[in-house]
Length: 385
View 1 (tube, helix red, strand yellow):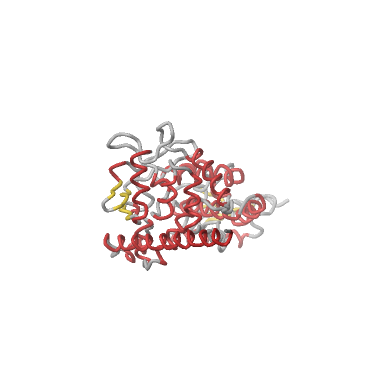
View 2 (tube, rainbow, N blue to C red):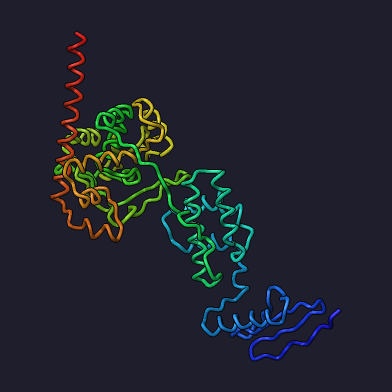
């Protein structure tokens, strides 16, 4: 058996041979800490090449402490969420994706143990177990966390390198007709019908409707002022804060045919008092997603809309009618409260006067559609008689 040799003196690092005949290498980092090669080498030359690569990384400033990534992924991921300062609904989504789809596979590992092959295997297993949209969201979250680990110099490269893995190929959302929107409003009942119309012809998100109060509604001109959003978490707690985007704070001019609907709702169903909530339940409490959801599903079934038609899809009806009424992309995005840095430059010149014109255009379209429906009904009655 070969004798263990003393370390070879070098300008950078040291190399020595074990009694087994294998070679090892060691070096001191810029702080003076000693590091040994994670594996042994078959030849002295291989050990020397490894040391040369380490020395070059230190010289270029590319060297990473090999022990830096020895951080538990679950602890790092949870701290990552806390440091993001995201909205409550986003925080809830991230934690759910972690708990259900990411931590069961990676929670017990260190950050530097998450490798590209392990990520590929995890994604394949997730695709076999759940929907592609959920997997895409989970992959994007994992990739974002690991990119921060790269920025924190815990790892050298992001292990999430699957092209297109974070892209969601969502189906085109369905759109309701004017007749179907009216039928949904009727099926929801007098107390909730205005929410349907606000969702379609606002178009307002349910979390934007939840905090609306009497002072936010104007009859002359007919409009709703959106200044807050109150999304409901799965715990049932509503979190009142700013709208989804900067453009979410807006005045929504409503089509004139809704005048009587808004006036009656204020008189009959809105909470009493000058600051009363616009939408409350039969007992005067703010509406809950669970209760409203049951009513919505029953109404949707009664009208004959598909099971995947969500309350949010009413916004697509509003978008379609706005476009058909002559609204530009600028007008439509302002009306819906949609915003990105790029979009803000596109629609920033859509002023209140133009928004009123859009509302008038929707009014004309709905009235025309209703007249056609009534005409068809009368024609059927005439034929039957």
